[in-house]
Length: 258
Image (tube, rainbow, N blue to C red; front, side, top):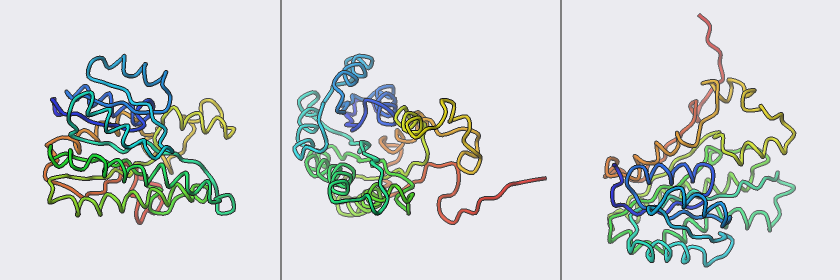
């Protein structure tokens, strides 16, 4: 039980990577604040987790959402030991389609809200010598042309992680960051269906992006997240870790033949 008696907030945890992290945290002994916009789905997740979970329904475009989330955790358990900033929007748009509205929405959800959530909880995290884990993306390094605002927001989140790890270290707060690659979440599956791919598209992904023969599963990200939320990773802070099937920087796609 690597997270016994810890209270962890996981944003965007009614589906996908966030849900997998929430479930793994509970399995490791934590109490978890499940957060999302879909109240019905959130209720299903919380009921399946039992007394170790509570729900906060909040739209991250609402600037009061960080206060709502922190208050929900404090009301439920009276402490906060960790925050996983997982919630994000991957609204797509190339340069020509990235108008002010799209840019502000993506940056607000993906970069401003994690900042404000940490700021709202900082005194409590200092009291518990807590930890923050920010869920980023390998798109932070450059990103696809159609993910301009998303990629910029993930670059900002990565800098936030490093900056606050340095600034908040003296308070005993650790902050680390996972840049994840292509993960087969329900939302990602449906997105590709909407793009016109076949129902079995995950089985058709080539080795240039999935050298193992399959995409990464949310549970595999969750397994890594537990280490960074637990005391096992103490005192490490300010780390940015890529979770992908190939080297992200300096990669040259090759084939191997004996």
